[in-house]
Image (cartoon, rainbow, N blue to C red; front, side):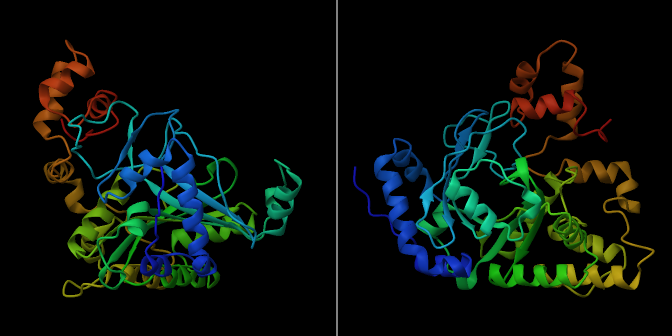
Length: 377
């Protein structure tokens, strides 16, 4: 099989770190070699070019992330593929698939991704040169930079960088959390990704009180940041869609102790700011300006702090809370939740799933385990 894959120049220059801009042709060559020589490559490419393409992956199976690693200015190479581990952190907006089959158990729907890793710390580079497998991570002063992006954006984009909003995660950590399981912050920007990250770094150095910036400082001071992964989650030219996706992503991770967002995402975040007096009713800031509003509030009210998200008067109203919890198309209705509990005395999760029309068996099992929909009585 032959291939001649080209990476979109506009998106490459818009998204990748500046130090990688001149290496586009090199990455193209590595990508083509992977597709031509790997049995996995041809199948990966078929899905990777599709904006809606996903791969269903179970624990032990290969994660469809093609990662190219560069040590300084040395020639890059294809890193070993990672396999899905139990407890993998991911969420998906998709509820219907071309196969017609829902996700099963611990199965995840993952988008084919291209990841670039740039290693610049002398200790990392020297260890790689000597073939060392261990080193004192606390001595690392230049975290490895990873940039992850859905492959279709670089291979067959459907939008122009000039009119696209970006939904992203910044992930950082050390050791076994590499590369996706560290602390993370979900954000959106209407500007270039590089500009937004530069603003975050300046805020970190300027003693910003935001949780994201505080935690980054703390981990940095303790020598516990050996990588930073900038992960693009999606693109859109529709601001409403951007808000909805951010809200879903933040809310889905709200109970995760690694989550560094301080308020809900999307329009729930705007509603939170207004209901708690941080934002006038008549003002609608751009998505990437909300951090400034929160930071200024924390500086002006150092002792008061932020009101607890979702613990407003409305949220204490159980009927209102249930309406919010069950309002999305991919959620169970209150009637379905009650039916699951009633049927659990006679039927298994698999049988209940087929009877009530849930998204998948795992959704039913989480209700039975008391992990979700606890407010539905």
